[in-house]
Image (cartoon, rainbow over all chains, first blue to last red; front, side, top):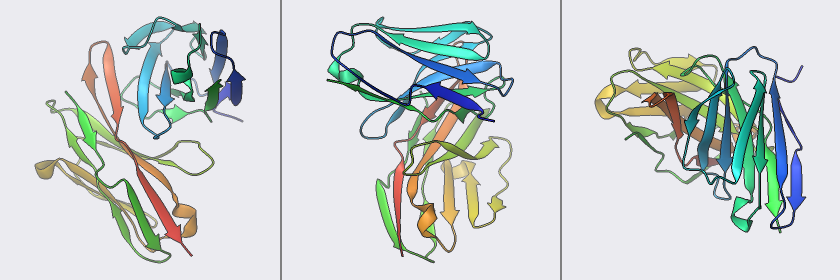
Length: 112
Length: 116
């Protein structure tokens, strides 16, 4: 039933580690996104993929690498985690922008 | 450059009061889209409304209403007879054409506390 799902919901890890967050949508949408929400609740887009092709890449460090194996999945891999990466990461999907984006439940990443 | 300003950081009301959340945006495009999302304490982001720049009609959905005014670049959200369950962070967002497609910018959010 879940429209946009993310795993894991919580991720606690040490600085320097590499981690991945997975996102899947079953809404038949063409476009998927990753957003970062910081501790002050500010929500900022990181990446946007349309049909597995990267279309928006904000000024995000190279340590962040999105991967879209098919249009229903968009995973986020983060290398060499830093303290400043601690945030809630939201995946979202939509039909062709600017259609409404539907968000996953978020993944709270804590880097120690 | 597009920008969304939600000047009210926090608002506190007592149940049954009406409350208006302000949103002012900046854009150079004539075609753009505006959204409101709700983020309750549980953390998920819930879509509330989408409005395009050519449709200035105000909208009402139950206790929620939205006032879109292009002349003042505002898209304000009013909750009538607020309830404790309305307590959440509310985000206004603007989507306009950008390199590679439409890009959505969110405002900083307004945290609404509704006290019983």
